[in-house]
Image (cartoon, rainbow, N blue to C red):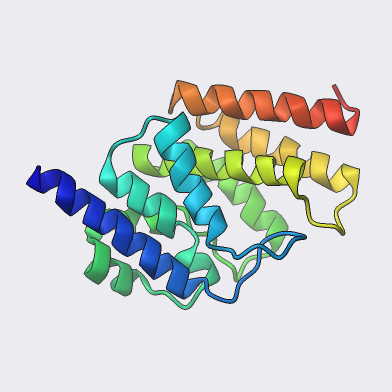
Length: 184
């Protein structure tokens, strides 16, 4: 019971930390609070992926903090431990690179990241494709939406064998996206 309590404490601490770091950020055309995205990633890990490993859940909640906020790796290490900080680091794009290069590197690196990072990456792509289907950015054309789905499929292809439940969900989401966007 003590281990469960410690695990849940770290999950709730991560939620509080991410909410603080992402405050003021907005995600979609409804201007939803950005924190909804990390919560959705953790929910996909738990419900779809059946992930019960606390560090993976914490990393799912924190996965965008290094990339999109003023959070440091040292801060994550101090608050959440070396393992969670390492997973979040693996998932962080180098924002000094051009967007096309960052996307290319995501595909290239996907097969070489840790099992925990692979699961978070897969849950993140599920959430992003879901957002494109349910609440896409208003400025995105159907071609841009489909382009994102095709790129995400290339990333996820490199993650095959990570989690059959999430892989199946991702495949079905992409099929739905293609049906809606007229590209079977």
